[in-house]
Amino acid sequence: MLALNEIIQRILRLREEGRARITLLAACPNSAAVLEAAVLTAARNNLPMLFAATLNQVDRDGGYTGWTPAQFVAEMQQYAAKYAWDGPLYPCLDHGGPWLKDAHTRQRLPLAAVMAEVKESLSACLRAGYQLLHIDPTVDRTLPPGASVPIEMVVERTIELIAYAEAEREQLGLPPIAYEVGTEEVHGGLVDMDNFTHFVTSLARGLAERNLDHAWPCFIVGKVGTDLHTSFFDPDTARQLYEIVAPSGSLIKGHYTDWVENPADYPASGMGGANVGPEFTAEEYLALADLVAKEEALCRSRAGITPSNFLAALEGAVYASNRWQKWLQPEEAGVEFADLSVQRRSWLVQTGARYVWTDPGVAAARQRLYTNLHPLLPHPNSYVVDRIARSMDRYVNAFGLFDSNRLLENGEW
Image (cartoon, rainbow, N blue to C red; front, side, top):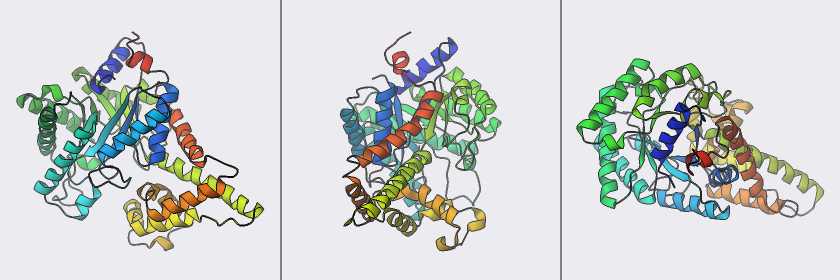
């Protein structure tokens, strides 16, 4: 398997030669079904798949998926064996930086403590075989609300974490890995084009001074118009950012690509990668809602079936987790869950489902749902996985990824 840095260089070369325009897809592995669907998509389409796992999802404490980095990689490999896929799969860390794990914010960890925690997680990722680390020190909970971290401080902390990871990698005797830097968030101060350029040039100078040129990032995250509530990608901004980073051998990575209206503009404008997460959670939720509807019909037609009450269990778990409050709009601050509209509650449950798929009550209700459906639908989980995989196919087609391993991995030049 080619290193991810080499894949990026080949994407740049193909673009420069006018032969192909490719954007890599990074699936956020926020559940076992999404992870399986991503491996299945890679196998069906002969493409490299990236997995962008946050510290909230996967970490030394198990995250909300229940996986440590080593368990996550092992699960990925099990699905690869299930589908007889030996092509490139790249486990990656997403948003590795201070206070980007919700627990660190809740615990009000000071800078020294939170940086130590992040470094321990970087070590765990390296030992597990991660191929890319997103270094993102663009949040500082010690600053006043709404204040951006100064660019110089972002650069300084980025270099500190890359230097730590490189020293740890060398000590472990591991081959080179890829890095991703920056953020799409406004609080990082990188939205303005001048600030973005200043960040890139300062980072290059700082890495050179530390003899870390070899760790130059293959991806730099850019603000390209999308966020959790905005789905139109700005190709003009993307082209400007591409022109800034391409000469140094990097590509722009987009986050919040979920439900994007114009995905074909990503490769056309030079985007190197795109993260998708909440959309796949929504597809998992909708597939399960379909199965609940089938279960309800089954309960009407056959006696002796105890309903799973899956959707009620899911809503109860999302409410009990308090994570739904994270996604409230400013005008909803302080409003109780029960006082929100049915539409908003449904959206919050759908969005927050990823946090509670592993909740014991939710898992038990899901298993009951599957058991009830088994007489007519022997493989209900495959129904869920296939629906998620179909949603991934939209990006496969738009991003020029179908059969892309023939170009990227197998050297078909």
